Amino acid sequence: MGTIRTLHDLAEVHTAVVFRDQAPQEHPEGNVRALAIRDVVSSTPVSWSELPRVVVAEKYRSNCLQEGDVVIPSRGDYYRAWLFIGADVPVLPVGQLNVIRPSAGLDAGYLVWFLNLPTTGAKLKQMLTGTSIKALTKTALQTLEVDLPDMGRQRRIAEVDQLGRRIAAIRHRLTELDGIEVAQLDGQIPQSGGTNA
Image 1: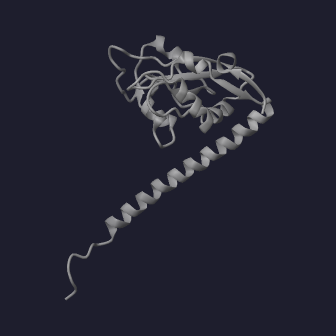
Image 2 (image 1 turned 180 degrees about the horizontal axis):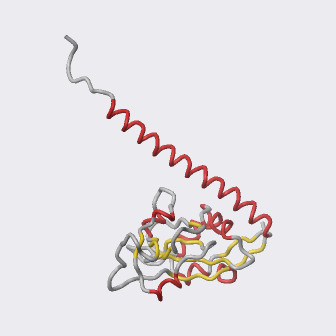
Image 3 (image 1 turned 30 degrees about the vertical axis):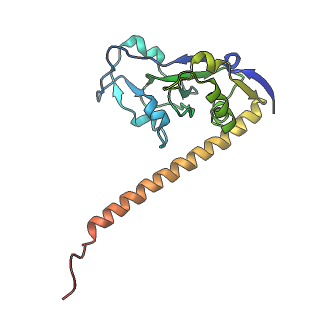
C-alpha cells in the first residue's frame, strides 16, 4: 500500500488528564466538556455537543482536544478510535484515554480508519498489558506500525470512512425516531381491556 512507519514517527501521543483526588463536577456553565472512556466505547456515535459541561482549573485547558485529534481508549476491552472534529465548547479528555495528534504527513481521518481495521485491532490486542484489566500504554501505542500511502490516497480513504460513519449515525438517529414514534402511538391508541359485549 505505502511505506510503513511507527506511530511515534507520525504523531504526538499523550494520555488524558487523570483527576486522582476529585473528578470535575458537572455544571451547566462549565468551561469545558468532559470526554470519558464510556463515551468513546459507547455503541452510539459520540455527540461532542452533548458531553457534560464541567468546570476545571485554567491549567487543564491546554489539554483540550484540537480539531483533528484522534482519541482511543487506554484501558478495557474495546479500542475503537474516534476523530475529534470540533465542538461548541472545548473538550477535555479525562481518564483512561490516549490522544493522538497526527503530524503533517498523516491524515487524521485515515488514521482513525487504520486504527479501526480488524487487522490493526488484532495488533493492538497483542500490545495490551495487564491480566484482569487490559491497558494500551502510550509507549506501546507509539510502536504501532502504520501503513502509510500517499496523502491523496489517505484523504480518499478518510472521506469514504467518514461517509460510512455519517450513514451509521443517520441510521442510529432513524432508529431512535422510530422508537419515539412507536412510543407516542402506543400512548394514543386505547388498549382493549376486555371482550366486546
